[in-house]
Length: 317
Ligand code: GZL
Image 1 (cartoon, rainbow, N blue to C red):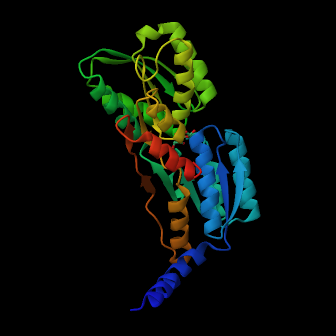
Image 2: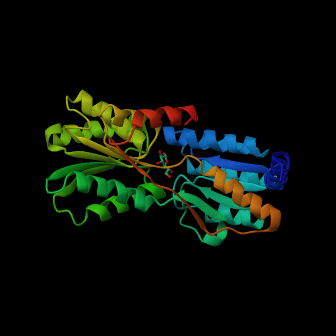
Image 3: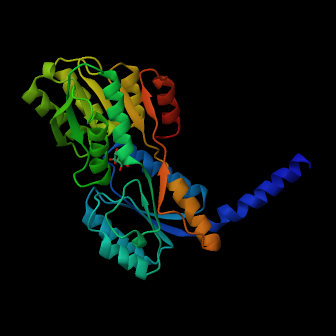
């Protein structure tokens, strides 16, 4: 078969898939722009919609659930074809999800889960946030084998599924290591600013010399905390080990500079799988599994973090 006919054939095969979403309207209720990862997720979602010819109605909730509920009600009133929801917290969604269901508008959860009846949403595209915490905990357990290590923890947004799960997973991993102990744990709300402020309070309360490691539920809080550690006269990545989650470019840079030690990658592309699911649904009513899991990969100082930083920056992350 000639190359030209192969290309034509593959184009025809692809066309219906991409054509499925073309012309559709999807409402996206995004949490906000609290972290570098969140900003990257927004960028990628808008790129994906544009490539697929989807009209994306974007609503930034400034990290407030009431704004997300208001946005969903607006999408329902506008009669969008589908809704993407990144739920800031896990509870309080039942009634608005029921309203979307009554309006026969499918809802796909992106990057966070809700404590609601799974019949109220089409699927959730997320990582395994408990496993992310376990990966971080197991890295520290291996690193500190046989040595006492007093850990401080920066938690994500209170009540959010990643904060609940990443705490659970980390504690599960270190449960059998009597040499590891979490001595301080407080929310930094997934932001750099709060991560710095809370780390400053940990350093004041404990003394830098009495803190062996920081576990942050996301890289942005870790990057803020690194600044606080330096201002306290200690060396992040050496005096105080730093392990977090997201693998945003600035965390790869910190690891490359020896100021951080490890991060667990979270893809910002949750929208790609979500749009593929909608394509299949609109094509022939195919329904997805209730959970589409994205990968979690550990990066450490053994990786070429400068190269990974450049690659991710080139993708607009
Ligand atoms: C996790 C995601 C978290 C990121 C943070 O799936 O919801 O929210 O880890 C972001 O960077 O604030």
